[in-house]
Image (cartoon, rainbow, N blue to C red; front, side, top):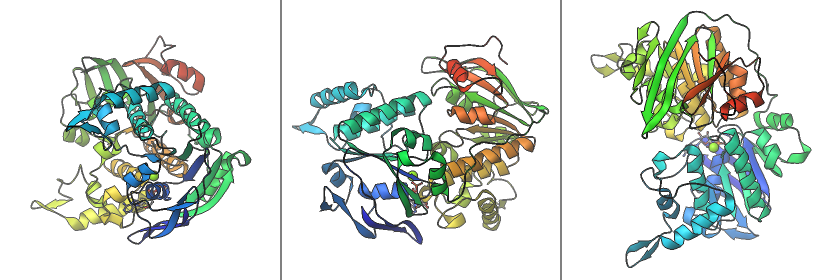
Length: 501
Ligand SMILES: Nc1ncnc2c1ncn2[C@@H]1O[C@H](COP(=O)(O)OP(=O)(O)O)[C@@H](O)[C@H]1O
Ligand SMILES: [Mg+2]
C-alpha cells in the first residue's frame, strides 16, 4: 500500500501511510485505539476508498472497490466486530454471497464437504447447523475465519482477533495463524497486545494518530520499546494498588441460580462486595459469568436466589429501579447493551437519566443540560471523537466508545459498579487509563464487581477473586497468595477450593 490517505470529515484517519508485506509473512499492525489500523485494512478490503494512494499485489496495481473485489484477489478479513447474521446458521453465514445455486435451489453438499475439510485441517471446530446467536464469541470468530478460507483467500487480515478470546483460545488461534503462515498464506494481524506480537509476528508497523511511525523487525525490539512507539511515551505495565480496609457491605447475592438452554447455567452462587473492594470473577468464557451478570443487571430473568443492593432487595426490580438503587454497569457487549450506535455521544451519555428533571422540563429534553453533561464527561474521561458531543457513536473507535460508557457509569450516582471486560479490545494506553479509573472508584469507597477473561487484569486489580467453573463458584482466592498458574487450574476445573463465599 503506497501513500494511503483517508479522511473522515476533518479527521485524517490515515495520513500518507505506506506499508509493504511479503508473502508468507506474519505482519503486525500496532497502534492505539483510533490510530487508523482498521481504516487502513478496510481500504485494503475494499470497504473504504482512500482519498489518495495505491495498492499493489505481486507488483501489480489493483483497484479494490468493494469486498467482492478483495475476495477475488484473495484478500479476506476477520473484522473487529464480527459481520455475521445472527439468525442464520454457521453454514449459511459461511456461504453467504458465494452460494452455489442450481435451478433456483441452494446446493449445500459441496460447501459442507469443503468446510468440513477446512475444519479438520485447521482445528476450527464449530457446529455447522448452530445459529450464530447461540454460539460463543470464540466460535463466531472461527466462522469468520472459515468464511475467509472458504473463499480461498491467501492474504488474511485479522482485526484484533484475540480481544474476545480466552487465554486458551488465544493459544489455539496463534497456532492456527502460524499454520497459515507455514502454508505460505500472508497474515496481517492487528493487535495492541504486545506479547502476542512478540509471539507470532515477523514484522511490525506502528501507527500513531493516522501516521506510520516506523516498521521494525519484531525479534530486534523489546516490548517496552514497541509500547513507547505506539503511545509516544513510556507506559507503566504495573498497577499501583494501595492497601484499603473494606467498608460496609454494599452488594449481596445469595443462592442465585439461572436456567438457560435447558440446563442450569448458574448454580447456587453466593457472594458479597463491600465498599473499597474490587471483587474479581475469573473464569473461562462460557462458564456462567455472562448469565450471572445479565441476571444481576436485569437483562435476563433470575430463577432462584436473592440480590440485595444497599440493603434493598432488588431481586425482582426493574432495570431502572436497579440503577436508581445504586447500580452502575459496564456491559460485556458494549455495542449491544452499552450504547445506541446511531445516537450521538451526548444522548448516549444520558441513556439512563433522560427522564430526570435535570434533563427534562415539561416533557421536553433540556439540550443545554445534555450538552453540558457531555462536554464535562468528554473532558474528564478523555473521550476522543471527530465531532465532540454531537458525534454519532457508530463512527467512534471502540476504545472511545468504551470510555464513553465508563464515563457515564462512573459519573452517575452509584455505589456498586459492575464492570464486565472493561478493557476488552483496548490498547495499552487506554487499558492503563481504565485500570487507574477503577482503582480510583475503589478509593472513593465504591464496591466493584469486575468480570474479566484476562487473568492478569483480575490478578492485578482484585482484592478477592471468585473463580467460576460450569456455573459454580469453585474457589475464593486471595490474589496475593496465588500464582497465575494456580488460578488457571481453578479456571479449568482441575482444582477446587473447600470454602467459597
Ligand atoms: N466511518 C467512519 N466515519 C468517521 N470517522 C471514522 C470512521 N471510521 C473510523 N473513524 C475515525 O477514524 C479514526 C481511526 O479509526 P480506526 O481505523 O477504527 O482506528 P483503530 O482501528 O486503529 O482503533 C478514529 O478517530 C475513528 O473515530
Ligand atoms: Mg480498530
